[in-house]
Amino acid sequence: MRFIVTGGGTGGHIYPALAVANGLKDRFPGCEVMYIGTSRGLEADIVPKAGLEFHAVRSVGIKRSLSWRNLTVPWEAWAGYREARRLIRKFKPDAVVGTGGYVCGPVVLAASRLRIPTLIHEQNALPGVTNRILSRVVDRIAVTFEDSMKHFSSKVPVNLTGLPVRAEITAAVREQARKKFGVHQNELFVLSFGGSQGARTINQAVVQSLRFLAGIPEVRLLHVTGNGQYEQFMDMLQTEGLEVNLLDNITVVPYMYEMPEAMAAADLVVSRAGAATLAEITVRGLPALLVPFPFATGNHQEYNARALVSRGAADMVLDADFSGSILVKKIKQYLAEPNRLQEMSDASFRMGRPHALVDIINLIQDIII
Ligand SMILES: CC(=O)N[C@H]1[C@@H](OP(=O)(O)OP(=O)(O)OC[C@H]2O[C@@H](n3ccc(=O)[nH]c3=O)[C@H](O)[C@@H]2O)O[C@H](CO)[C@@H](O)[C@@H]1O
Image 1 (tube, helix red, strand yellow):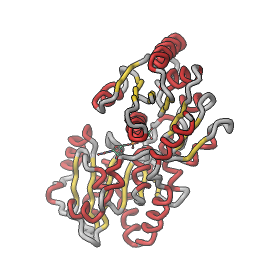
Image 2: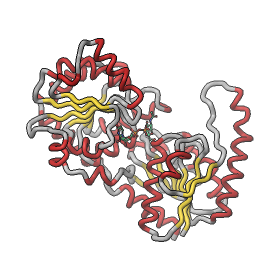
Image 3: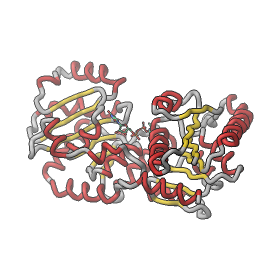
Image 4: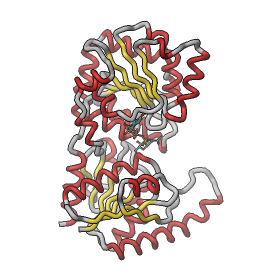
């Protein structure tokens, strides 16, 4: 068996593609998997490190603002399509799977024209432009959120699978994780972070709230600033006259490499609303206070957040409204109403899709038979 997976640009498209590649290898021992991306995207770095055969094709996105570069788009797109077609003809895959990003366009389109079974996975509640176009030519569509199903044409079967999360996220054990982070039984352990890059708004709000949170001993806060924003965060603390080492119940780190354990230990997550983060939160049944990144394409993070909010799994505060005083107010509310947290947790757990990967691999198996 041979498969091609494609998806690129940001980690949000690449990690689900890698999860699918690994899932295919488990389901079809001895199968060959080729990854097609671009040479400029993060995938050119990540995919070879993951031990997969990687090939790059040209791919272009249309600039939303007026730009002379858009004039070269048709030529570049045609060149990328021809490169993808050549790779597919040579490799002869049994199926091609796309997880979004511009590069999926030429690869999935070429596969479909060559009558090779195709599946796309959409991570966000508001589908990206490439997946919307491809949805007309593929054999199967898998989605993370029920809310995105209405954006696809009814001709192609759309399946609600969820987004595959790392196995460690489900495997981490709460009691062990709480011990590791020194969390006492009755403490409310709050994990705050802003996606993989960190979020300035969340960082600022945390700085503004630290003096108050330090005075609430029932709360323990683990805050992740993002690697690129750690120094700025420390500068802001200094300006406020705060020394984090002196605050017993507060820990600040630049990046959390042990996110599975941190989530396992947490009672509440404060974060952006990237699709991977939300898949992890719901698989663990965590209640969340979400502050969507307002500049994500098409404002898709707000749509992602609303998918949880409308089902009672999370609260949302828009980026423009979020501040230290809102954060403190919300935490005080949750402390005063533990039932509310429990209800959010139950609703979150109901949305979680721990079998996302298995369901996606089943769909791939369906289209190749
Ligand atoms: C800014 C932007 O447009 N981001 C998009 C990008 O998300 P991006 O990949 O940046 O962010 P996500 O929130 O989806 O995922 C972040 C991942 O990083 C992990 N993590 C984070 C911080 C940390 O310290 N340690 C750690 O391990 C999280 O556990 C999670 O697995 O692609 C997603 C899927 O298309 C979209 O939904 C997001 O909107």
